[in-house]
Length: 55
Image 1: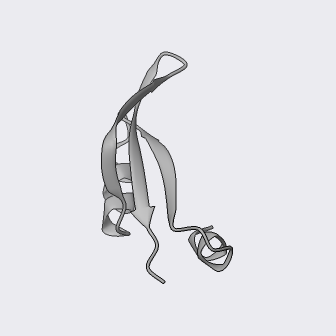
Image 2: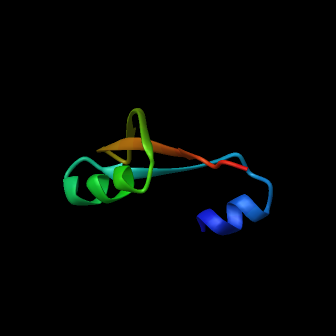
């Protein structure tokens, strides 16, 4: 998906990771995603992560 976003001209991709899933957050941060704060969605707490795509 990151490659597709880059090839399509997007400058960033984002995702939400459940606060109850710290291993997923670790994976995404190793890939270069950065935290942009928390979000509440359908009663659950999620962290908004963003990856800026270099061109």
